[in-house]
Length: 180
Ligand SMILES: Cc1cc2nc3c(=O)[nH]c(=O)nc-3n(C[C@H](O)[C@H](O)[C@H](O)COP(=O)(O)O)c2cc1C
Image (cartoon, rainbow, N blue to C red; front, side, top):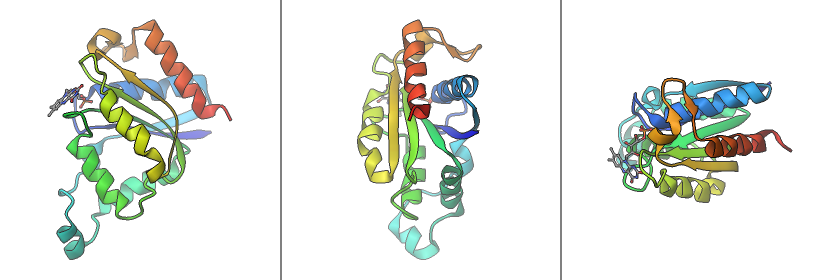
């Protein structure tokens, strides 16, 4: 059975990206032989990265815990929130600390990368950064999708995409994880 690790790259308890990535993980579970876990980045909070902190106290334990979660997974689903055109501070900090253990943060795992925002841009700037830099961090991106105007295209109560075209695109991108 394929083990899927899913998370939203944000620390918001009301995260729209968490809603999207959970929907994607459920689709994958229903359409393939997959089980999934959704991480909460709040469980991996650390002080802001600094080389001084690293020299004085080493790398905090949550970074290794995050790396171990990735190691245990066969596939990864991430949905990126966009703050001022880039990663949220919460994700970037976790990523920076984890990269100090080994730059190959994602350990050659295959992934589908998603992103959404309330606006028409659909967080595609941060998604572009994540897709473009993935090879440097040993993340094998099989597919990606930006969902624009989240509140127009997603039913928050049912936890599903309501836009047929986006829904089909998501299923198609997810299928790239299981196709050889
Ligand atoms: C500091 C800050 C900066 C933001 N910058 C952007 C942005 O550049 N592009 C965008 O589409 N949305 C931006 N937003 C709106 C976020 O997309 C919105 O808060 C969204 O809910 C974040 O995703 P999340 O709910 O998964 O955390 C910003 C929000 C905040 C708080």
